Every structure is written in structure tokens, then in C-alpha cells.
Image (cartoon, rainbow, N blue to C red; front, side, top):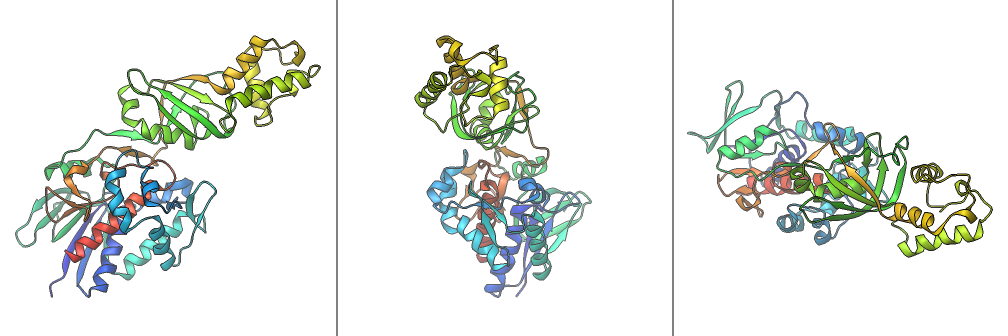
Length: 414
């Protein structure tokens, strides 16, 4: 029986996972297969290496498919069916079969027990070697065209031609991948950065970089757009605000923020774990019980002292003033800035190479039962090249695993 020739365009998370699973499915079915992974750069699995600060946030330990899919600003409806077949729980089991245990942190993110992305990379590279999958680096695919001997031909920049029965395009957010998809008749939806932090210059944030707030409530007001709300941890950085809460907010508002040139108003409740009425009552109680105490020394215990002192300075309140001398108006100003603190966003900041982009191949043009193109039979898509993106926390990698696994199964059985 002549081997099934599969070409994988893109040596990242989705490409490797699809290639490995296609080889495993072919083994089960005793179907001869030849699989080649083409990577344009000199390094495979680049994003896997830097993910999660080098720890690799593999997935999220939310095993209810419906709720899991709610973490995708784009693609949540389309992913429902694929996730029923291969979800986060299946990812955990898959890695366990390869001898890699994943452990969940308190926020649900799951990492290898080694806390190193190299564990995931070495697992993939070992499997590729064991399964005789060919890997070719520094070989950008310049063209995908219909073939004479096989259904398709991949043409590299060096003008090498590879005949394939099936092709997977898994190029992430690389420009070339979108161009290849368009050449096959696909529409690329509007693209925009997702998962970015906010550039904010404000005296309240000055010299407080590294200070984090475990639970903040955030509202994003964009000119001529609906407002967006999220809750979550927030981190003060050198350039403004970041942290999971901010990143989630940026994901949901990705396209709207791009249209607004990343200018918007952010309203922060620094103590969202407390009811606003309770915050005001706390301040009133502190004032009542600490009349002779300087305001710099008595403050809500949920706040870091350096943040409290900075807040007082920004509000131009004398830190040596006794609580008994704080007026109702001053108390109200403190309350207002703890629960409805306004900042003007002046831009966005992306995490070097570790970023996600919304937009991509139109989901209407993909069969989500197989991940096969409706425009070009025998061509499949997986991962971030699709108009699918998740919030931070392992959701984007799960999209890569799920769509890659589904494409692999369909390629070999089809």
C-alpha cells in the first residue's frame, strides 16, 4: 500500500501535535504514512519554549466543555464540537501517556511538574524521532498548488517541491500563513493584537512596579464603543498595568481597541473582593477608631502600605494628618479612588514573541468536524491561524491541541 503523504506547514504547537497524532493514528490503523514538518525559521516550537515564562502553560483544568469554551472571545461556538472530542482532560491524559504529568495551580493554569517548557519540547522531539516524522527547518513554504501525482504540492522558498495527499497549515500568526490561506480562496478576518497590557502614565503608578492586586474589577470605556468589564489580578508595571485581569480585558476588546488606536479610559476598583458599601464602611470605621492616629499608619489591611501612601500623596492629603481631622469630602475622595480610579490608556504593550493575535481564516470556511477547508479539500487548518483566540491561562494552547488532534484523525481516516 502506498504511503499517505502528509505535509505540515508550521513547526509550532499545532503542527507538531497534529503530526505526532497523525503518525499514532496511522500506526493504530496499520496505514503507511510519511509525514514532514516544514518550519520557516531555524527553531521548532519557539512559542512553546517561551510560553508561561518558560514554564509552558499547557492547558487549563476546567473540564466542563461548555464553560471552557466561554474563555474564547472568538471561536467559542465553533470549538464546542471539537472540544467534545478532545478537551483539556484529554490533553492531561495524553501527556500522562507520554510520561509527562501536568499539575494545576490555584488559578487553574496547568504546567508540567518540571515547571519547564523543555519537558514538552523534548517529549515532542523524542516522539517525532520515534515515529520517523521528518522535520525540515529554514524551509518557508512559498506556494501551495494542485499537484499532478498527488492532490497537492508544497513549494519551498528554495523551489523544492513536495507532493502531498494532505496538508495542514498551522503557521500561527505568521503573515505567510495568511497569504497561503488566501491563495487557496480563504477570507482572512480583521486581525488585531490580543492579550496585551496597557501603557498608562499616572502618578499613582509611579515607582510601584511589581505591586500586584489579587482581585480587581476593571471597566474599559472606549470612545463610540460598548464598554467591557472583567475581574482578575492586576499588576503595576514600569509602563502601566498588566496581569491576568488586564490581559483578559484586552482579549475581549482586541478589535475595538485597535480601532480606537489604543486610546481608552480604564476604571479600576482596587478592592473588588469587597463590596463597595463595605469599603466605605471600612474607611469610616478606621476614621472612628483611629482619631489620633496619622492617616499614613491606619488604612484598609487589603492594601499595601506603599500603595496607600502613594494614593494619599496623589490626592494631596497630608500623610501626617490625624484621622479625626479628615473631612467627609476627603474620605469620599479616598473611597472614590479605591473603587473607581480612572486612568487614560495611551497605548498597548505586547510580550515580545509571546503574543496572541485575533483574526485569521474565517471560521465559516472550515469544517469543524474535521478541520478541513471547505475551499480546498485535502487542506486542513489548526491553531492560531484560525479566527480563534482565547484569554490567558492555557486556552490558546488547548485550541492548538484540539484542532491539531482533530485534523490528524481526519487526515489519516479520510
